[in-house]
Image 1 (cartoon, helix red, strand yellow):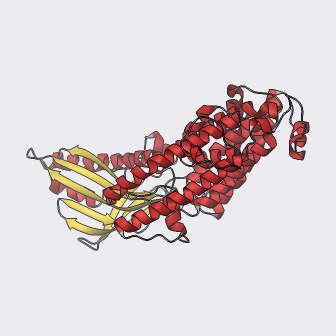
Image 2 (cartoon, rainbow, N blue to C red):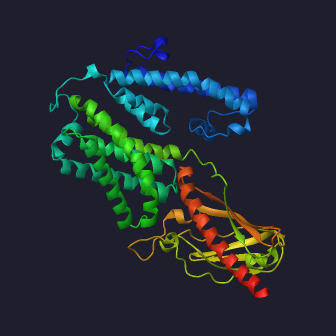
Image 3 (cartoon, rainbow, N blue to C red):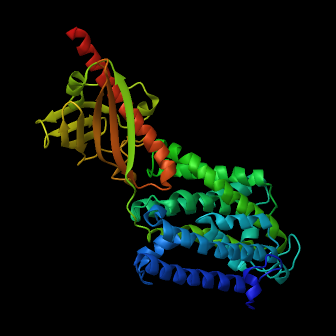
Amino acid sequence: MALRATDLWRWDGTIDRASYAAWGVGLLVLKYVIDRELVRALSGETWSFLDLQALSDYLLRRSDPAANPQLALVLAALALPFMWTGFVLTLRRLRSSALPLPLAALYFVPVIKLCLFAFLCIAPSAEARGGVPGELVGESRLARWMAAVLPQSAFGSAMIAAVNAAATAGVLAWLSTNWLRSYGWALFVGLPFGIGFTTAFIHGYRVQRSFASCAGATLLSLALLSAGFLLFAMEGAICLLMAAPLAIGVAFPGTWLGWAMQNALWKRRLTGQMLCVGVLFMPMLLGVQQLDPAPPPLLRVTTAIEIAAPPGIVWRHVVAFADLPPPHELLFRLGIAYPLRARINGEGVGAVRQCEFSTGTFVEPIVVWDEPRLLKFSVTANPPPMEEWTPYRHLHPPHLDGFLRSDGGQFRLLAHADGQTRLEGTTWYRHHMWPAAYWQLWSDTIIHAIHRRVLAHIAQLAEAEQTCAR
């Protein structure tokens, strides 16, 4: 290992794995110390080296720039030279291992960059190992065993790779959801990426495969994993369908990385060592994720409707309404919880409204009673958000308990000069699923559908009463 200062800015040449690992760890520690002192000087906040929460916040870049714009600008400017150094070190390490240089772009991808760094710390330099295709000179016992077990046929190789990746991911998914009670980025990003990487790597061990062949094996692995979730009563069909676009979208970059590395290393037969990176990467993420217990953000969804009736009439049907007709929307017929009726005990602040859904009852104590303009309530009890499609009589995965929770809601009535009313329904909620932006697409869509069902029913009742009063 030879550490040279020029390693930090030159993009040409190569670097060995020991130097790459030393520079990577050393620069991370250095930047952490510098950032820690800047934060202390500019904000008065002090980090402890033993504070795992502060370390998690730092490593995962979880901060709000608007809270301290000056500090955010200084930290961003300081990060630029470190970003350049990390990129050129990764570029030179890829060149040293005779790997595709475009892989350096993964250095800028959160979470995935950890896998790339671990891989490059293990991958030998191109001149360190010899051999030709098909030879197993100097290979490990694991590599010789893999060569003896894996078939050369594309179907057989894909099946073994898919079964191995799906079984490993299934066990880790069970640990994440049932033991760690976590539906975070390790589950929805780390596992699919690891599935794609591991499947492509194993599939291309005996014979160099095309990317299309590796992608097909990855899809087979995801299909087997989904079937396992259904068979062993871990998940229902609806949640699997919701997660499918995310899982496929993340698994394919993992497939491409595994295929590119396997293709580059095939002549040197280094797959035994490299496979360990993909296998160990997934459980490592589950452990790291536990350092990130930050509370989920409070989200808001508002839906509005115009009603041909004055606020006084609309108000009566907002406070409580009779039974809704059976739903015709596909979303609700697939098992998503939908409202049935609303009742109220009492009047004014302190009254308790109960909104009955197909899966249970929301308990909603009134906190603002401004008749006929605003009805605002908190939520003290949440029923499950859906009934899963499953071959079993009863299935209740952990995410149905508290992972999508309403904190409160309100109805706002705005009077128009022509005697009509604009009725706005708002829900404040939290969900503990990551990535939050992806799952928010689903949760916002579901809540908007619930709002539209309730608002349309209120409009129908209010307009019918207005018609009778004329």
